[in-house]
Image (cartoon, rainbow, N blue to C red; front, top):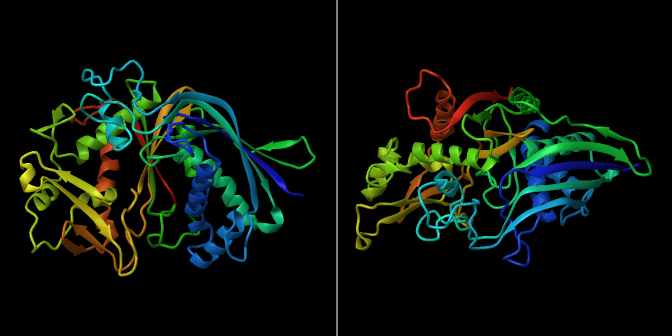
Length: 421
């Protein structure tokens, strides 16, 4: 008999997702399928011992493909229980804030939502794409054709549904905390039967959330960086709480502000009204004085590409805006490398908790280069060194919660770590 799987989620942060009507936000089944497939693949790396051929075959049988495997083993639908608040382009993302108003604006949210939320000027805080805002609840129902899916692939599918509700989200900028989803219930049953089995107990505290994260095993993963973004022995999560807010979007703002302070050079010595830390002076100087003799790349590419630089000290005639982007191997177009750092806002009851998950993997395909304007350089070969800035940022969050740390606080309460073995 086929199984019926039901996963119920609630939206914790604004979701930027539209369908055919570009000014109408929409909770789309294809978007969820894409997210489910991503997290299935992320878990499959260890479940199938890094065997890429096996992973491709199991993925094709589970989700379908245009080849011999044909139809997906999953027949899915979304049932929306609460449609939440709908925002159109030009609306203010944060309630009770007037566009272009005073400095109460959540600069960290605008930073994480770059391209989706206007970060300055008279339209500060206005969204550039339609959004759904909490409360939004929905259930994904799946009919699983068991004769088309292996037991390991089915187990990975169940765990992928959990991973989405602990580390992931949907829509644009979901890696930056937007569209975060909290898993509230997960059940399995059979056709023709009213009996269901509960597979999920929502974490009610930070400790329970950490325990739920730690249950994802990477025991079968090879001791090397994955070939694609996946859970591996090199992955880690940092779980953070706020000491000043119970609002999910405000916690996301605090995380974004922390990332701004860590990465940013600032203007006139300031980053979001705070003294600039200028941790990456070498990156700044490298891009400011770009020369043909350059043989290295900025360290901050570890957070993803493309990466833009703006120099307020230069005039427009001096081309103040410069970019760093990936350049694929011959014959392969490559225009971006998504961040390996996933930001997720989880709700433990009514308390928002930030989950920052680092999933390092091969940074770019073999033969790729890093392009800085017209200059091309080889990628850093040692991935441990390349990813150091991301590791340092997570360590910074852990230090922020220690009483002996004298650096300026941005509202964090506790920060604890989860590693997988």
